[in-house]
Each structure stands twice: as structure tokens, then as C-alpha cells.
Length: 590
Image (cartoon, rainbow, N blue to C red; front, side, top):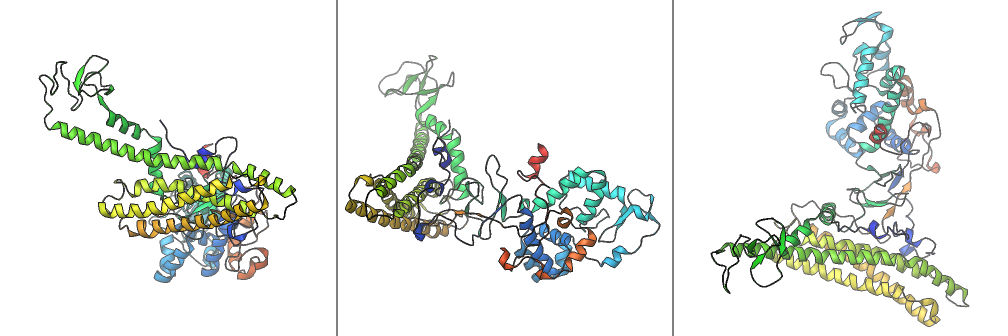
């Protein structure tokens, strides 16, 4: 039996509802206080397969300019520190450049050392054969082996999924091999593996970056989302999916990720059905089928013919009187059985209380999402009349505020179920403290609920049939209730963050902050480079050296769309080089 009803489930019929913002398409919104469009300078970015390289280049450029490194060295550092530039800088300041490089396996040597001529015959310490100097390769750390051994080493590491950090073959050498060397040798014998290596390097920006995650849409839209601030936030991809960035499930604030995952599991499995069976039935001691008592006598009979005691579940005969069963006594087990049954009943009724209210608001959310078309028709009818009312943005604002508040109310019930239950915070609060906090929370919740219902009722009024004075009265009521519900949502979140979750000592429960304008729609990252030359994206050893000698101002200017702090390079990769519609492991599996 499945009891889960998410926001997506509520909108699975013909009038599909994807987000608060989508439900308002086609209705003008002129008041900036409730505007749904993303604010300028959005800190959340959508990374498409075309802009993935540009996003990676931003961080690479910062490290290259800061430490005067070649690109593959900067990439090695960033992969080691999971593309966290701030952490990299902190290690640099705290431990110094030498320690920073050593921990990441970066060896920086002068090019005159690498370009020095090799002997005519070089002994390879791996295959123990002498090879001509032209058939060997020396890497940054100074170790030199034959190309065949290098190629086999690189192939093994790529197949093992270690292509992002391939170490030198020498014993106890932690130096990371130059990606240009890997690409050059592998592509000669296995071009497909070279492309796989390139893709892994490119997608490392998403797979190894805590600030970037794939959009969890199904089917996969091919986009990734990058955030700049707190990872406990809710975002909206350009495909329209709203989700929690931390756990990648549907947006569930004010529930914490742990609470929401427990709630989803509780609603999906049959645990509450089992609780009901435990509370209302007893297993037959003969056939073990659950038996429900339909009378007051504690001597019950199963359909298989077995008689047993309802209090203890033990098999008995059929002879009994008003006070006892012949030849049977439950003793003290009767008290323990009653306690177990009462506890199961209480837990079941408590769950049903919160689930019914959660479902009621999701059902209301579904019905109210259909108001969009009705309100559009009413606005059109009213505008056709010779009326002094021309601005109907208050309807849009009120409808949007209704959607936002309804979502908050819906998810507040799973939060309350776990916040004031025994499953998560039993040791964090005494019973008296829990009751006080529960009363505080429920007061805030009920105030919000009452005003949301008022707003819903007023928005359903057929204002196109009313006089202008009546419409003006409805307009003021909608505006006032919109402000009130927004304020109450803020207060509810403050109560949760400060008075409830903020006082916990051991719990790791964080929620996405409340935003009046709703979940932020991510803006697409602008690719400021224009080139389809693959060699520019993946420079050779010599080209990377020349690249590092360019002045720091060689990137695009501020007017081109890139910030002066993060300037992207103008060389890039063709849009057809990689298929990034799915993560690499999915592509390889297919």
C-alpha cells in the first residue's frame, strides 16, 4: 500500500503543475514586491553541455593566474580540493605553496629540464627493455618510461575510473601525470578511450564539485546547477523542475532533508498498515492469520476453528464463564499486551492526524492550481467592460502568494510529525519542553492556515460579476491577506530555525530559507569564449606553457558578460565533442 502524495503527484493529471511560477504564466505581474521573475545577478546558474567548459574555465583561470600555473596543474589542484577555490586558498595561506602542491601531487619543473635531450637508448624500469629515446616519455616529476608501458598504465586507470588523477608509475611517486601526455599516448592506439578520458576530465567539474550537481529530472534534461552560497537551498532548473540542492529530492522546506526522507519512506512502505493490524488484530495461534474482534468477549474464534484468548493470544478451549476462560489464566502478560496495543494505536492515530492534513493541503494545492485559467477568463471579461479598473496584478500576486503559502503549510505537517515525535529528538528535549515548543509552533501554523484559507476563498470569488466598488473591496482584501500570509510564513520559518531546530545540540537538521519571491530560478551561465578548436581546450604541453605566459587580461572584458573577478578564456571546445545529456557512467553503460 502506498500513501505518498507529493506535490508532483497532485499535479499529475491533465492540468500539470510544475512550479509556482509556471502556474502564473499569461497573467501580468507589475508589482515588484511579488514578482516571480528571477532577480538580476542570480547566484544560481544552469550549466548546459555548451557552457560546462566555460564554467570549468572560470575556476581554472583563477588558480592559473593566482599561482602562475599551467592548465593541467591547476586542474589537478582543483580536482584534489573538489573544485573548492576557497579551500585551496586557505591551504595555500596556512601551509604554503610547497605543501599545497605536494598534497595534490603537482610537480612544477622548468621546461628546459623536460625538453633536455634523452639518451639514444633508455632503459624502461617497467618492462626492463631498452628503448630508443623517441619511444619514451618523461613526465613532470622526471621519471621516464617507454610509451607502451605508459599507454597500458593509462588504459588501466581510465577503465578503473581513475582518469581524473592518474599517478606516475614510479614507486612511491605521487606526482599526477600531465593530461596532455595521457591524451597523446592513448589517442594513438585507442581514440575512443581518449575521448572518454576527455569527458571524465570535463565532467569532473560536476562530479567532484560540492557546489555543482546534476539536475535530478527524469528523463535527464542534461543540465547541472551551480550554487554560490549555502548548499541547503532550493533551486529551479531551466527545465522547470524545483528540487532541494542538498538531497536532490523535491523541494520540501520547511522539512529538513532527513525528515523528508523518513516521511517519504513512511508513506511508501506498509509500516502504518502493520501498525493498524498490530493495534486491532491478534494472530491466530494455529493458522497465524490476523483476527479482528467484533464483540466484547475476550474468547475469540478464528475461521479455522481455533479458539484463543484475545488478551494474550494463547490457544484455549471454548468453555468459559463471565469472568474467565476454563483452564486459562493470562496473569501479568495481560497488562503488557494492553500497553503494547495502546502504544500502537496511539502511534497510528498520530500518524494519520498529520498525514490527513498533509494530504488535505496537497489536494487543495492541486485544485487551486486550476484557478489560473479561471482567473484569466475573469480578468478578460472585466477588461472588456467600460471600467476604471485596469490593473489586475493584485490577482496575480494573491494567487502566487496562495501557492507559496500552501506549499509551506503542506510540508509543515511532516516537519511537526518528526519534530515533536520520539523518533528523532527524544533525547534532545524533555516532555515538558516538547509540549511548550509544540504549542508555540502550532499557534504559528494555525494562524497561517486560517489566513491561507481566507485568501483561497476570496480568490475564488467571481469578481467579473461584481460592481466596481465590490471589486475594489476584494482587491484590498487580497492585497492585505497576501502581505499577512507572507509575514506569517516568515515568522513560521523563524520559529523553526531559532526556537526549534536552533536549540538542538546533536541534530544535523538544516532547512532551506524562506524567500518571499519563491524558489530562485537558475539563470544560464554565459559562455564568453568562442572557438570550436579542440586543441585550444586541451592544450599540449608546449601550448599550455605558452598559455600561462599570457597576460591576465587576455580574458573577455566586463562588458562581454563575464565578471572581472572570474574571467573566462576565449578558447573552447566544439559543441559536438561530448554528449553530456547524461552523466558519464550512464553513457558508458548504454
